[in-house]
Image (cartoon, rainbow, N blue to C red; front, top):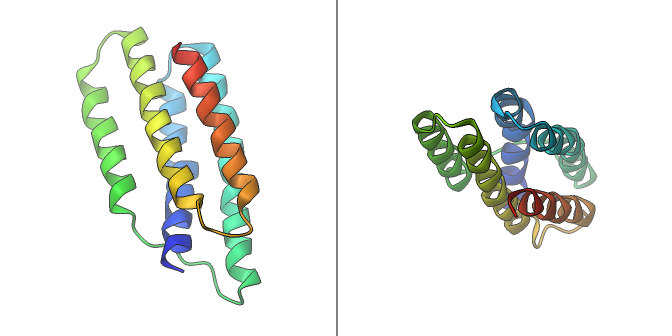
Length: 132
């Protein structure tokens, strides 16, 4: 249950804090569109994870994720240091890739949420192709 609670915390933080802030700061239209698409998918993931709790007869609860929080702190610290828009966008994309890997790791082993895992893998591929 701890993994599911951590996953919910991550998805909620992405949907309601992190992705909206990143979308506002991205300069490239194509990258912005990728993050907007991911935001919409992430909101759906929040609903799916919450539904997973209910299917287990539990109220959805989230638990702080130190690993994810570290990724976000690193992103925020480095973002403040980058003034060139193209470099900032590349940093946002690379940070997005790190977050996708983290999410995929959390989804591994959480039964019934395989569709979310597939969405994360697709988002990872899109971010990686944007950098290439």
